[in-house]
Figure 1 (cartoon, rainbow, N blue to C red):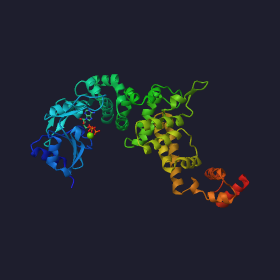
Figure 2 (figure 1 turned 60 degrees about the vertical axis):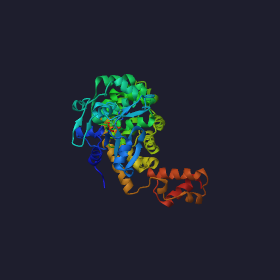
Figure 3 (figure 1 turned 90 degrees about the vertical axis):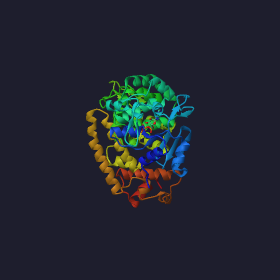
Figure 4 (figure 1 turned 30 degrees about the horizontal axis):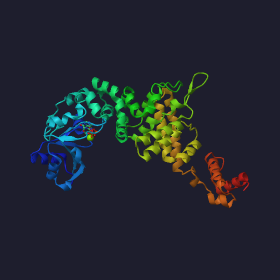
Length: 436
Ligand code: ATP
Ligand code: MG
């Protein structure tokens, strides 16, 4: 049976230790937000925690840092003071303490340094509740010191501001701007994990505009986008602001779509040309952007499936689709599901442009409707769907590379309605065209 958090706290207390909920769960509970996982901090040392719950109920998740997982669900960490830091990363050593206040003082932000006991009693030595009510992210202690200990906190500050819709307190913000270069020392996995949360936050637009320097510290490839004027009637924002606004118009739960939009125009500055009227064009930016995105996402260790989706969508996102046949053609290239993703992406893209451009979204809706009908009627849109196969091409006397070329040609003709998807008609065409 599922054990409650109260049970964990009360068993530790009954054994004579102190135990509190701490961090995100307390913060979110005070704010009335959804609590997704519960961290517990305790005066008990890891072996004492193990003795209280029994080995069978313990996973030694991070024994070195004093963390065990109890009942597969609760991360229980011994009060600790972090030792000196190496390379703005992890503490070289941690020291356990029996003082809750000492443990709270090692935590990153005041809103994350509040402890709550089983009776709802609060310990809040750094004014976390006041900062919650003022909607502010503020370092515990001196920002410069805290960021030089662990530079990931710089990105975490910005991520929390985005997620919670908070501002960043002045001296904390100043230290973020002056120290964000330290993020270069942080492991790529930790960076992408934070970025994912940041771009899905309710306040991501403001945060990404105000702290673009934090983003370019981890993804320098974005530098040219910032302030890059587009000089076209479609756009009212520079490339960076357009990117951010397009991204934020995707649903916050759809992390994959947000990520794709985050990177979608990264190739624009490199592809910009200006015609004689001074108007900007960005020919090829989708292909260039897709390549850049693939490299960046690999470097930051996103998984292959995630990378493939983003790269595929970005590589075709600026192609014009006008007709039902174009819909089938795109489906034949990237698959049905990805076609619908592309349409969602293009609608969000438009929402980050000039207002009149958004009118095009009703047209995209009609293409989506076409797409659904094509799927429902299973209209031919792939080689597998053709009424002839490679074997038929061989029977018609074709060999080698001509087989593939012939099938591709037939698919094209069927998609664009020049030929019916019927074996006789297709074979006649082949015999006529390829002199087979
Ligand atoms: P989330 O809602 O994302 O889980 P959280 O505040 O719970 O937010 P976690 O990463 O789960 O964040 O960390 C739990 C707690 O541990 C934090 O609230 C904070 O008190 C502390 N903490 C985590 N990372 C750091 C860090 N890099 N430096 C200092 N304290 C940290
Ligand atoms: Mg947490």
